[in-house]
Length: 238
Ligand SMILES: N[C@@H](CCC(=O)N[C@@H](CS)C(=O)NCC(=O)O)C(=O)O
Image (spheres, protein in one colour):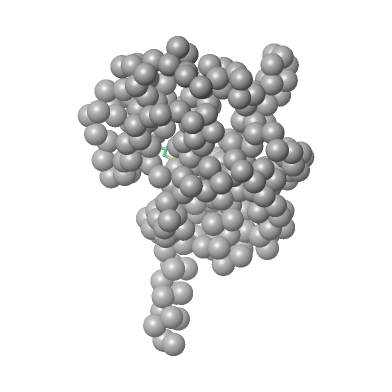
């Protein structure tokens, strides 16, 4: 299908491979089969002038369309879903659209709790943030459980990076997350819910995703860095 009548020809995305917000946008672009130029940045090391020109906040995802830009995963995904209505990423009527946006906002709230957990400096802060994460995740379980059809929606797009992040963090923290929040164990089933679109998601993941996440965590969280040290020492002692 020729979509050039719908969009200006040049789309550029500034991103950072393990960022869940960037993953959402890349997943939407993949689902829509949209040609674009992807610029991978190490956003916590350097913010190049090319990015700052389009987003003075220096954040990713930043989508550039013909010399203009939009800079937030929700804004970008809603815009793409509206331009490419035929893919039905959003329902048609305004109320149903608002309900989907409500679910997306709830998932963003869970991400804010994950972010706190990822920065936990010690065991007490980690445990407190795990409780808060558990509470927020319980609240969105109906949204997660409703995702069992083959219809790809923006809710599905939002859930995929969330599920990946939670499962990988659980691995890195040696099962502490799923011990506290059993629902995390059933998240893989959600990934199977829509087989073919999920393959497009998996194709976007850096092969060393868990390793990259671990490096980032060890910089952000003293608690995690200490856990990692202990594990390394045990491994060396063997
Ligand atoms: N609400 C934003 C969040 C984007 C975000 O937090 N991006 C992070 C990378 S995961 C970032 O750009 N951090 C760099 C910074 O804040 O300086 C969205 O949904 O796009």
